[in-house]
Length: 200
Image 1 (cartoon, rainbow, N blue to C red):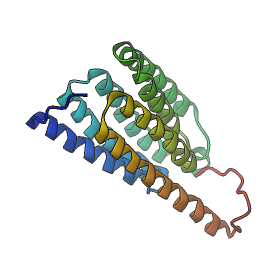
Image 2: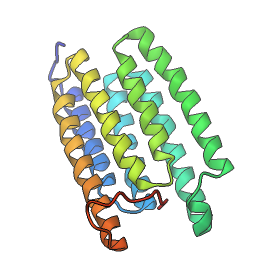
Image 3: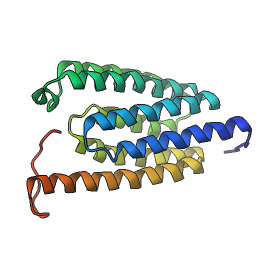
Image 4: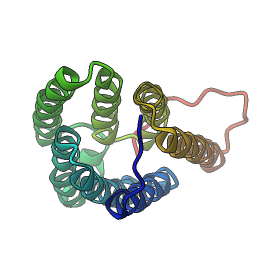
């Protein structure tokens, strides 16, 4: 990959870095509302990055996630505690629409570059994870999607993305460990006991 360090490219990488900072921060949140706030800010910076790079398939794919996350944030706040613990009809509708749009833009990206299949798979996993009511699933699936993004970055020769995504994996794992440790402390459960599923 031939990188030309033009002012435009440098600015794009600054926005890319800000996007990763937002995503890492999202994995340090314990409640879904906090996750959604920072998971929305990340794609906002990413869309600017892809505009500057002229990567329109990636731009539209990220653009889908912004209104999706905003809608989920406000609909989640209006729901009762019981409703927040399970997927409701509107959650399923948001998930299906998001997946269809991601697959559409992903198909365009794959035609342009077959290696994009790893990036598309990662985007789909992230879409499913952000729609989950249990924050624990967001952490676990986040690690999976980041590993796929690393593979994609290796294929396209983006060393910067490999480094930043690797840092993101570390942030995801740290957040995941803190989350599950917190659950054990709240429930006063020994480390060797497997916790049953409970939505948060």
